[in-house]
Image: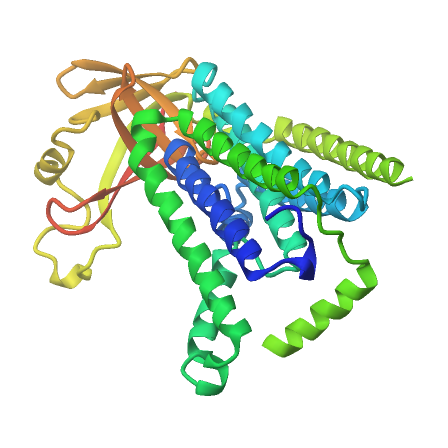
Length: 258
Length: 160
């Protein structure tokens, strides 16, 4: 899942990475909605709210929402910076660092929420900010290492792509193309995983409250350890491609699929 | 060299973030925080329906709610029959009713300051959307389907 980069990745690598991370994203988003009355990954919605608050002249809320959007942006920036600037011989480590940062964010929110949270608005705003940063890290990492095939929290784009691929499958010439069928399965898998994560979180959040973030963190640790165990068992990682070839590939791919 | 570059980019990003937070803090110092805006004494001015399934002409009850409808809608809610809402900065809310009776609750704001949470000792939570809050007016929304599916607006004016 995390060991491979760009077009070294198989459909199964992308499917496992996409569904598992989307499941946690769904859990985090619904948990944030129930606990804080704010989405942790719906950046499209935050842009709309930002515009509405500007129009209404609510400048305090404008600054809050702007900093939330910025932190999502910053998380994606950090994730991709680590991936492209890290040591090429240590691909797993480069890909694991954003996940480790994400786990630290979940643990920070879980520990603070469970032991110290007194429900002030400022605490709420900071905790939502940390979650948006973590979702930015996740989305940036998954998009970066999958050559922009996976975006776990971008459900608007995913629903559009899902509809497009479903319509492509109505024609026999596309049904016979494995890449179209696989992309459809991947998108459907991410949508189902995200929704399932949301349903699970929605079902347990009132009972477990902030402890849900511990479970999400453990789930992410499991993903890391699972992938690390594969390296340990096979004893090698698959080297990443150089950037020049990767850009060429992404162009070709978009033309093929577009 | 790569480690140096990663450290350089991370440091630059951290400095950028720090500057952003300083600028935001400076700005927010000059802006009124929603928790400060809500602190004080508020008097209920009117209740009315908003965003109903039916339009005004086909309704068999008034859009601006009378005491009888208010009574039935607010039955079971914390602010039932209250007229004056006193929010203090320690998150205590005292509701003064028409018959001089008082009810003490706790209040919290959620989201970006657009949700008002009322509760008795963390039990019986109620949530209201703060549609508008200024120095002298607050509009609260809550969903209701007692008479028709729609949103009830409570308009309060600050008196102190």
